[in-house]
Image 1 (spheres, rainbow, N blue to C red):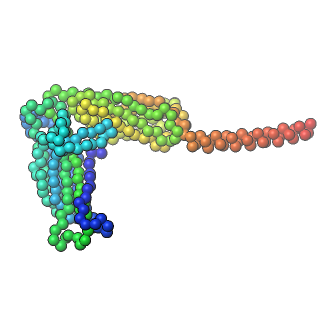
Image 2: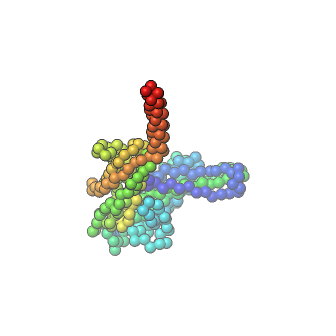
Image 3: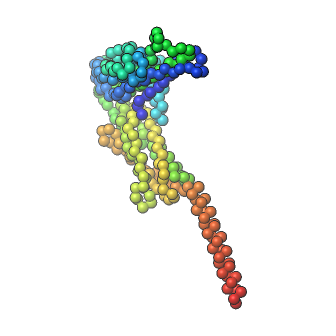
Length: 302
């Protein structure tokens, strides 16, 4: 979820019959918690390995970002846009550029320096590690070729000490009232009303009209940023044939707080219902024919 692996290309010559030279990276961890006091600095390590079969030029840089309700990121250069929770300008990698041979690894130190007037709460940035394959001399392919870069994002979650407000609520939990197939989508919206991120996980359970649990969906860990909404969408596949059910969404924070909401709904699969209705019609027709023949025989005997 948090690993942002992007590939993009630099093209030389025609695309037709071109050779693609790919970069490949392994970067971990992909999420770093960095608590820091105003006016002070903290540090963390990022492990980088060239998993490609050629030497690679590595670039390391931080970017600001925004994140919408569905978890989609939009990235900006530091200072390109005013973002209240930005920490991109606070972050300094020990190396901004390096070279790695195939299978070679390096540990990069990154420092987060909070200004003296830093506001308490969460401040965030994405550190990108970008690799470009190196070709030189006899390694340069004949004819057209494409260099394919790789980029991995590491989410840095900085927290400036002080008056921390870790507040959240379930804004809504939606399941369609009528579902016409064994596939039931659901959406729960978590609202972060505090000034720091909240790490969330959870589960959605499904019970039939008798209260028996008939299904469940685990909600994998994700991060809710302050003063924002996070939409969590899941689908219950292979639901029972027909009936009334209740879905219960339970969201749990890393520090043990729980939020719960329930929603009732019906499952009435049209395809299966059409088969059943067709079967009923066939059986009713057969019963009608049999009873008519029996009645006719009785009348003839009389």
